[in-house]
Length: 500
Image (cartoon, rainbow, N blue to C red; front, top):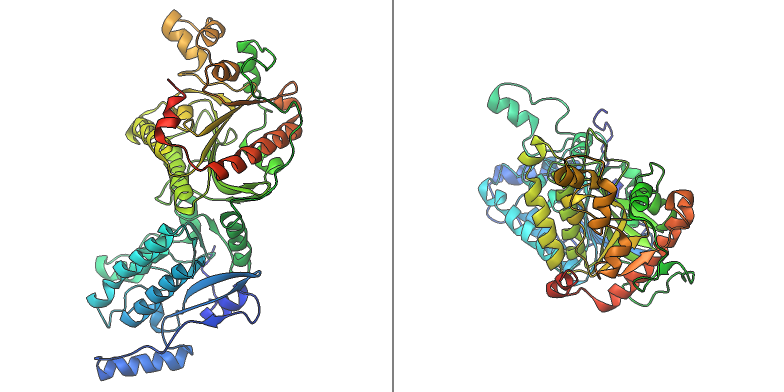
């Protein structure tokens, strides 16, 4: 896709995103002490050309009736570059948004540091990043829309710190501007790298969204993030929707449960969200250059109950591309989001197993499993795990630790596929059913052992009643989330105690 021809200026973008007539500027005219006559004249020309007095505007308005703070760049003023006065304005705007408890929408567009001011302007990115970090530490949303172009210190500071980050179609986004690269190295920068679409493909930004559609995705994200944490009603459960007492569920032969969980038509996380969630905002990747189709990450509501959702996606896992270490790094991004936003975290286990390959070893798979376990056990947000289907090995275990653990009736968890256990013990695959029974892999076994708190009924099999099963699971998740929001996160010791 080509880069945008008609770049919306700051005023146009404000009109597109905010409710009509709701914009209120927070800006005062910048002080320009101690600058040269040449620079003063350049600033005056920039103001006359752009119609604004600096490269950023700050203020507040209503977006679909919700009060929000806004920081928006203006490329027409010295290519959106950041000098001391614009940095002061950004920091003041962020700090005011934090003090007033407002979600902050940032829409940078910039060539980076203002070269006329040099290093004193360059180091302002530290102040801006600190202000953003303080805003996020207050559990306030910071949502970023990267516009064409955003490069240099802006991309390397406040442009890359969003809880949710989306880019303008065709936008040039990157650290080193291509003109600078060519001047320094005598050759053009490779085509197609510094584009919004390529950053999305590499899991660095969450979506590519046209300016006229940005209000929709921002509103959906804030609907989840700012949902009430208390006092909402939940969907009533059928009397036999769950089995809460160990031994109360109908017996299912172990190998039968394993076989049912592997049915290709068994509903996975995407069908669960389609039928059971009231709001879904998909996110994308680690934000650090990785994206694994085997992991779904998103902001989700079940009924009125909000959460960050991490689900192993059976549709995205194939023999050629099994769950890799990048998927677990995506999961850890979701854990950080839950902590920063003060939202419960829901994990969903449904995997044939993590990748067994040289690439997985080189990517640090074992270390990522360990870090997921440590992060989940110590997370300062309520946690809820759903065992949805297959639960093979360390890739499944990585998402297990939680304050509450639910399991579908035919879900299971084992150190290896039963066939692998059979190969180790019996040197054949024929003893897989026997090994599954001996290893107590079923949800029903784990319920009896106290590892699972609640079993969700399948009637008689999730694949045969996909929509009804997903809605049943969603209602249980909604009920459990409501209880966790009231109780708050458990201690690491409590989370570990269920395995004693």
